[in-house]
Image 1: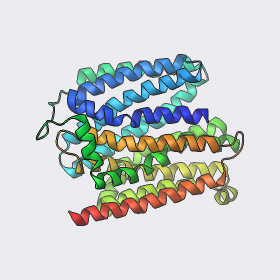
Image 2: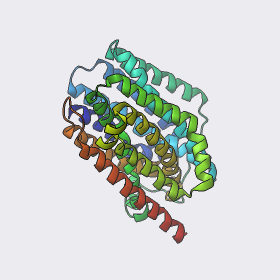
Image 3: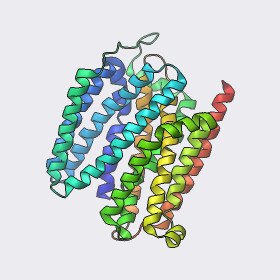
Image 4: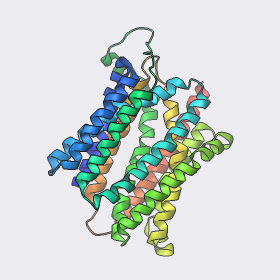
Length: 356
Protein backbone atom coordinates (compact mmCIF):
# COMPACT_ATOMS: atom_id res chain seq x y z
CA UNK A 1 0.00 0.00 0.00
CA UNK A 2 2.81 2.42 0.91
CA UNK A 3 4.71 1.66 -2.30
CA UNK A 4 1.53 2.16 -4.31
CA UNK A 5 0.91 5.47 -2.52
CA UNK A 6 4.41 6.82 -3.25
CA UNK A 7 4.18 5.77 -6.89
CA UNK A 8 0.67 7.17 -7.14
CA UNK A 9 1.59 10.51 -5.55
CA UNK A 10 4.64 10.69 -7.81
CA UNK A 11 2.47 10.19 -10.89
CA UNK A 12 -0.40 12.39 -9.74
CA UNK A 13 1.84 15.29 -8.66
CA UNK A 14 3.18 15.23 -12.20
CA UNK A 15 0.20 14.40 -14.36
CA UNK A 16 -2.31 15.83 -11.89
CA UNK A 17 -0.48 19.18 -12.06
CA UNK A 18 0.12 19.05 -15.80
CA UNK A 19 -2.71 21.53 -16.26
CA UNK A 20 -0.96 24.07 -14.03
CA UNK A 21 2.35 23.44 -15.80
CA UNK A 22 0.71 23.83 -19.20
CA UNK A 23 -1.07 27.04 -18.19
CA UNK A 24 2.22 28.47 -16.96
CA UNK A 25 4.05 27.34 -20.10
CA UNK A 26 1.56 29.14 -22.33
CA UNK A 27 2.38 32.32 -20.42
CA UNK A 28 6.12 32.20 -19.67
CA UNK A 29 7.19 30.26 -22.75
CA UNK A 30 7.82 26.57 -23.38
CA UNK A 31 11.62 26.79 -23.19
CA UNK A 32 11.66 28.58 -19.84
CA UNK A 33 9.17 26.12 -18.31
CA UNK A 34 11.24 23.17 -19.55
CA UNK A 35 14.40 24.56 -17.97
CA UNK A 36 12.72 25.34 -14.62
CA UNK A 37 11.16 21.87 -14.57
CA UNK A 38 14.49 20.12 -15.15
CA UNK A 39 16.07 22.14 -12.32
CA UNK A 40 13.26 21.30 -9.87
CA UNK A 41 13.48 17.61 -10.73
CA UNK A 42 17.20 17.70 -9.97
CA UNK A 43 16.31 18.84 -6.44
CA UNK A 44 13.53 16.27 -6.13
CA UNK A 45 15.78 13.33 -6.97
CA UNK A 46 18.42 14.55 -4.54
CA UNK A 47 15.78 14.57 -1.77
CA UNK A 48 14.72 11.06 -2.83
CA UNK A 49 18.26 9.80 -2.41
CA UNK A 50 18.61 10.93 1.20
CA UNK A 51 15.06 10.48 2.52
CA UNK A 52 14.59 8.11 5.47
CA UNK A 53 10.85 8.36 6.13
CA UNK A 54 7.62 8.02 4.21
CA UNK A 55 6.87 11.72 4.71
CA UNK A 56 10.11 12.82 3.07
CA UNK A 57 9.62 10.26 0.31
CA UNK A 58 6.22 11.80 -0.43
CA UNK A 59 7.78 15.28 -0.47
CA UNK A 60 10.42 14.08 -2.94
CA UNK A 61 7.72 12.45 -5.05
CA UNK A 62 5.80 15.73 -5.16
CA UNK A 63 8.90 17.74 -6.12
CA UNK A 64 9.98 15.42 -8.90
CA UNK A 65 6.40 15.09 -10.08
CA UNK A 66 5.74 18.83 -10.20
CA UNK A 67 8.95 19.24 -12.18
CA UNK A 68 7.56 16.91 -14.81
CA UNK A 69 4.32 18.87 -14.75
CA UNK A 70 6.33 21.88 -15.86
CA UNK A 71 8.45 20.43 -18.62
CA UNK A 72 6.39 17.56 -20.08
CA UNK A 73 3.32 19.39 -21.47
CA UNK A 74 5.55 22.23 -22.63
CA UNK A 75 7.87 19.81 -24.42
CA UNK A 76 4.86 18.23 -26.13
CA UNK A 77 3.44 21.63 -27.04
CA UNK A 78 6.87 22.73 -28.32
CA UNK A 79 7.04 19.66 -30.55
CA UNK A 80 3.44 19.92 -31.77
CA UNK A 81 3.87 23.62 -32.54
CA UNK A 82 6.95 22.85 -34.63
CA UNK A 83 5.04 20.21 -36.65
CA UNK A 84 1.94 21.89 -38.02
CA UNK A 85 1.31 19.10 -40.55
CA UNK A 86 -0.75 16.34 -38.87
CA UNK A 87 1.13 13.46 -40.47
CA UNK A 88 4.52 14.95 -39.64
CA UNK A 89 3.33 15.47 -36.06
CA UNK A 90 2.50 11.76 -35.71
CA UNK A 91 5.96 10.84 -36.98
CA UNK A 92 7.57 13.31 -34.59
CA UNK A 93 5.69 11.92 -31.61
CA UNK A 94 6.59 8.39 -32.68
CA UNK A 95 10.26 9.39 -32.54
CA UNK A 96 9.62 11.13 -29.21
CA UNK A 97 7.98 7.98 -27.87
CA UNK A 98 10.93 5.87 -28.99
CA UNK A 99 13.33 8.06 -27.02
CA UNK A 100 11.12 8.31 -23.93
CA UNK A 101 10.52 4.55 -23.96
CA UNK A 102 14.24 3.96 -23.91
CA UNK A 103 14.61 6.35 -20.98
CA UNK A 104 11.65 5.11 -18.93
CA UNK A 105 12.58 1.48 -19.26
CA UNK A 106 16.38 1.62 -19.25
CA UNK A 107 16.30 4.00 -16.28
CA UNK A 108 14.94 1.37 -13.88
CA UNK A 109 17.61 -1.05 -15.10
CA UNK A 110 20.29 1.42 -14.09
CA UNK A 111 18.43 1.97 -10.83
CA UNK A 112 18.47 -1.75 -10.07
CA UNK A 113 22.26 -1.72 -10.42
CA UNK A 114 22.79 1.30 -8.19
CA UNK A 115 20.32 0.16 -5.52
CA UNK A 116 22.65 -2.73 -4.75
CA UNK A 117 25.24 -0.08 -3.77
CA UNK A 118 23.13 2.45 -1.89
CA UNK A 119 19.88 4.28 -2.58
CA UNK A 120 21.54 7.62 -1.94
CA UNK A 121 23.81 6.86 -4.91
CA UNK A 122 20.73 6.25 -7.07
CA UNK A 123 19.17 9.57 -6.09
CA UNK A 124 22.42 11.49 -6.49
CA UNK A 125 23.11 10.11 -9.97
CA UNK A 126 19.55 10.83 -11.08
CA UNK A 127 19.87 14.40 -9.75
CA UNK A 128 23.19 14.82 -11.57
CA UNK A 129 21.70 13.62 -14.85
CA UNK A 130 18.95 16.22 -14.64
CA UNK A 131 21.46 18.91 -13.76
CA UNK A 132 23.28 18.02 -16.98
CA UNK A 133 19.99 18.02 -18.90
CA UNK A 134 19.20 21.50 -17.59
CA UNK A 135 22.53 22.81 -18.89
CA UNK A 136 22.24 21.01 -22.22
CA UNK A 137 18.75 22.34 -22.94
CA UNK A 138 19.72 25.84 -21.81
CA UNK A 139 22.55 25.73 -24.33
CA UNK A 140 20.90 24.01 -27.31
CA UNK A 141 17.08 24.32 -27.10
CA UNK A 142 16.10 27.15 -29.52
CA UNK A 143 14.06 30.05 -28.27
CA UNK A 144 10.43 30.12 -29.39
CA UNK A 145 8.16 33.11 -29.51
CA UNK A 146 5.08 32.95 -27.34
CA UNK A 147 2.00 31.94 -29.34
CA UNK A 148 -0.84 34.27 -28.43
CA UNK A 149 -4.49 33.53 -28.97
CA UNK A 150 -7.08 35.72 -30.61
CA UNK A 151 -7.74 37.42 -27.28
CA UNK A 152 -6.11 37.14 -23.82
CA UNK A 153 -7.91 34.85 -21.38
CA UNK A 154 -7.46 34.09 -17.70
CA UNK A 155 -6.39 30.69 -16.43
CA UNK A 156 -9.86 30.16 -14.99
CA UNK A 157 -11.47 30.94 -18.35
CA UNK A 158 -9.14 28.47 -20.05
CA UNK A 159 -10.12 25.73 -17.62
CA UNK A 160 -13.83 26.42 -18.02
CA UNK A 161 -13.50 26.36 -21.80
CA UNK A 162 -11.84 22.94 -21.69
CA UNK A 163 -14.48 21.58 -19.32
CA UNK A 164 -17.17 22.67 -21.77
CA UNK A 165 -15.60 20.74 -24.66
CA UNK A 166 -17.29 17.38 -24.32
CA UNK A 167 -15.45 15.71 -27.26
CA UNK A 168 -12.11 16.65 -25.67
CA UNK A 169 -13.23 15.47 -22.22
CA UNK A 170 -14.43 12.16 -23.64
CA UNK A 171 -11.15 11.68 -25.48
CA UNK A 172 -9.13 12.45 -22.33
CA UNK A 173 -11.19 10.04 -20.21
CA UNK A 174 -10.89 7.19 -22.71
CA UNK A 175 -7.18 7.83 -23.26
CA UNK A 176 -6.65 7.57 -19.49
CA UNK A 177 -6.81 3.82 -20.07
CA UNK A 178 -3.20 4.11 -21.27
CA UNK A 179 -1.68 5.15 -17.90
CA UNK A 180 -4.03 2.72 -16.15
CA UNK A 181 -2.50 -0.10 -18.21
CA UNK A 182 1.04 1.23 -18.18
CA UNK A 183 1.71 1.68 -14.47
CA UNK A 184 1.06 -1.93 -13.36
CA UNK A 185 4.29 -2.64 -15.24
CA UNK A 186 6.07 -1.07 -12.25
CA UNK A 187 3.95 -2.56 -9.47
CA UNK A 188 1.93 -5.66 -10.34
CA UNK A 189 4.45 -7.23 -12.73
CA UNK A 190 7.32 -7.06 -10.17
CA UNK A 191 4.96 -8.64 -7.61
CA UNK A 192 4.26 -11.41 -10.12
CA UNK A 193 7.99 -11.91 -10.70
CA UNK A 194 8.80 -12.21 -7.00
CA UNK A 195 5.87 -14.54 -6.35
CA UNK A 196 7.00 -17.00 -9.02
CA UNK A 197 10.65 -16.92 -7.93
CA UNK A 198 11.98 -14.75 -10.75
CA UNK A 199 12.88 -11.83 -8.51
CA UNK A 200 14.99 -9.02 -9.87
CA UNK A 201 16.21 -11.08 -12.85
CA UNK A 202 12.75 -11.33 -14.43
CA UNK A 203 12.02 -7.66 -13.78
CA UNK A 204 15.29 -6.80 -15.53
CA UNK A 205 14.27 -8.98 -18.48
CA UNK A 206 10.91 -7.20 -18.76
CA UNK A 207 12.55 -3.78 -18.83
CA UNK A 208 15.18 -4.91 -21.33
CA UNK A 209 12.63 -6.47 -23.65
CA UNK A 210 10.28 -3.49 -23.59
CA UNK A 211 13.18 -1.07 -24.11
CA UNK A 212 14.67 -3.01 -27.01
CA UNK A 213 11.32 -3.55 -28.71
CA UNK A 214 10.43 0.12 -28.24
CA UNK A 215 13.70 1.47 -29.60
CA UNK A 216 14.08 -0.97 -32.51
CA UNK A 217 10.47 -1.21 -33.70
CA UNK A 218 8.82 2.15 -32.90
CA UNK A 219 9.40 3.73 -36.29
CA UNK A 220 8.62 0.57 -38.35
CA UNK A 221 5.43 0.00 -36.34
CA UNK A 222 4.38 3.63 -36.87
CA UNK A 223 5.05 3.32 -40.61
CA UNK A 224 2.96 0.13 -40.82
CA UNK A 225 0.18 1.76 -38.83
CA UNK A 226 0.16 4.71 -41.22
CA UNK A 227 -0.13 2.36 -44.18
CA UNK A 228 -2.71 -0.11 -42.89
CA UNK A 229 -4.68 1.45 -40.00
CA UNK A 230 -6.59 4.65 -39.44
CA UNK A 231 -5.87 6.81 -36.41
CA UNK A 232 -8.80 5.35 -34.47
CA UNK A 233 -7.95 1.79 -35.46
CA UNK A 234 -4.36 2.30 -34.32
CA UNK A 235 -5.47 3.62 -30.94
CA UNK A 236 -7.94 0.78 -30.46
CA UNK A 237 -5.49 -1.90 -31.56
CA UNK A 238 -2.76 -0.50 -29.30
CA UNK A 239 -4.90 -0.45 -26.16
CA UNK A 240 -6.23 -3.91 -26.97
CA UNK A 241 -2.72 -5.35 -27.22
CA UNK A 242 -1.71 -3.71 -23.94
CA UNK A 243 -4.80 -5.10 -22.22
CA UNK A 244 -4.38 -8.59 -23.67
CA UNK A 245 -0.75 -8.67 -22.54
CA UNK A 246 -1.95 -8.85 -18.92
CA UNK A 247 -4.20 -11.78 -19.83
CA UNK A 248 -0.99 -13.66 -20.67
CA UNK A 249 -0.11 -13.60 -16.96
CA UNK A 250 -3.31 -15.36 -15.98
CA UNK A 251 -3.16 -18.94 -14.73
CA UNK A 252 -4.10 -20.86 -17.92
CA UNK A 253 -1.11 -19.62 -19.95
CA UNK A 254 1.28 -19.65 -16.98
CA UNK A 255 0.46 -23.32 -16.41
CA UNK A 256 0.92 -24.09 -20.10
CA UNK A 257 4.22 -22.33 -20.92
CA UNK A 258 5.67 -21.41 -17.53
CA UNK A 259 5.76 -18.16 -15.61
CA UNK A 260 9.03 -16.84 -17.06
CA UNK A 261 8.10 -17.29 -20.72
CA UNK A 262 4.64 -15.84 -20.02
CA UNK A 263 6.09 -12.61 -18.60
CA UNK A 264 8.57 -12.34 -21.49
CA UNK A 265 5.83 -12.70 -24.11
CA UNK A 266 3.74 -10.26 -22.09
CA UNK A 267 6.51 -7.65 -22.32
CA UNK A 268 6.68 -7.97 -26.12
CA UNK A 269 2.91 -7.70 -26.65
CA UNK A 270 2.66 -4.83 -24.18
CA UNK A 271 5.41 -2.90 -25.99
CA UNK A 272 3.83 -3.35 -29.40
CA UNK A 273 0.55 -1.97 -28.08
CA UNK A 274 2.22 0.98 -26.42
CA UNK A 275 4.10 1.84 -29.61
CA UNK A 276 0.84 1.89 -31.57
CA UNK A 277 -1.28 4.00 -29.26
CA UNK A 278 0.87 6.54 -27.41
CA UNK A 279 2.17 8.63 -30.37
CA UNK A 280 -1.35 8.81 -31.75
CA UNK A 281 -2.80 10.01 -28.44
CA UNK A 282 -0.15 12.71 -28.11
CA UNK A 283 -0.46 13.86 -31.71
CA UNK A 284 -4.27 14.10 -31.53
CA UNK A 285 -4.52 16.61 -28.65
CA UNK A 286 -3.94 19.70 -30.90
CA UNK A 287 -7.15 18.74 -32.74
CA UNK A 288 -9.07 20.24 -29.79
CA UNK A 289 -6.72 23.02 -28.65
CA UNK A 290 -7.28 26.71 -29.22
CA UNK A 291 -4.48 28.91 -30.48
CA UNK A 292 -2.04 29.93 -27.76
CA UNK A 293 -3.38 27.30 -25.34
CA UNK A 294 -1.68 24.14 -26.59
CA UNK A 295 0.35 23.40 -23.44
CA UNK A 296 -2.74 23.83 -21.26
CA UNK A 297 -4.63 21.25 -23.31
CA UNK A 298 -1.72 18.83 -23.04
CA UNK A 299 -1.66 19.51 -19.31
CA UNK A 300 -5.36 18.88 -18.83
CA UNK A 301 -5.18 15.73 -20.95
CA UNK A 302 -2.34 14.28 -18.90
CA UNK A 303 -3.93 15.44 -15.63
CA UNK A 304 -6.90 13.18 -16.23
CA UNK A 305 -4.48 10.30 -16.78
CA UNK A 306 -2.63 11.22 -13.61
CA UNK A 307 -5.77 10.99 -11.49
CA UNK A 308 -6.58 7.59 -12.97
CA UNK A 309 -2.99 6.44 -12.38
CA UNK A 310 -3.11 7.54 -8.73
CA UNK A 311 -6.34 5.70 -8.00
CA UNK A 312 -5.31 2.55 -9.87
CA UNK A 313 -1.86 2.42 -8.23
CA UNK A 314 -3.28 2.67 -4.73
CA UNK A 315 -5.99 0.09 -5.42
CA UNK A 316 -3.60 -2.36 -7.05
CA UNK A 317 -1.07 -1.89 -4.26
CA UNK A 318 -3.76 -2.37 -1.63
CA UNK A 319 -4.87 -5.72 -3.02
CA UNK A 320 -1.47 -7.20 -3.88
CA UNK A 321 -0.80 -9.89 -1.24
CA UNK A 322 2.66 -10.08 0.32
CA UNK A 323 4.85 -12.95 -0.95
CA UNK A 324 2.04 -14.39 -3.06
CA UNK A 325 1.10 -14.22 -6.71
CA UNK A 326 -1.22 -11.33 -7.63
CA UNK A 327 -4.87 -12.41 -7.69
CA UNK A 328 -6.11 -13.73 -11.04
CA UNK A 329 -8.93 -11.20 -10.92
CA UNK A 330 -6.39 -8.37 -11.36
CA UNK A 331 -5.23 -9.60 -14.77
CA UNK A 332 -8.77 -10.18 -16.00
CA UNK A 333 -9.92 -6.76 -14.80
CA UNK A 334 -7.05 -5.03 -16.61
CA UNK A 335 -7.91 -7.04 -19.73
CA UNK A 336 -11.62 -6.18 -19.66
CA UNK A 337 -11.14 -2.49 -18.83
CA UNK A 338 -8.48 -2.07 -21.50
CA UNK A 339 -10.49 -3.74 -24.26
CA UNK A 340 -13.62 -1.77 -23.35
CA UNK A 341 -11.64 1.48 -23.49
CA UNK A 342 -10.08 0.44 -26.81
CA UNK A 343 -13.45 -0.07 -28.51
CA UNK A 344 -14.84 3.14 -27.00
CA UNK A 345 -11.84 5.16 -28.19
CA UNK A 346 -12.15 3.69 -31.68
CA UNK A 347 -15.81 4.71 -31.90
CA UNK A 348 -15.00 8.16 -30.53
CA UNK A 349 -12.40 8.73 -33.25
CA UNK A 350 -14.80 7.40 -35.87
CA UNK A 351 -17.53 9.83 -34.78
CA UNK A 352 -15.08 12.74 -34.93
CA UNK A 353 -14.09 11.76 -38.45
CA UNK A 354 -17.73 11.55 -39.55
CA UNK A 355 -18.50 14.96 -38.05
CA UNK A 356 -15.54 16.57 -39.82
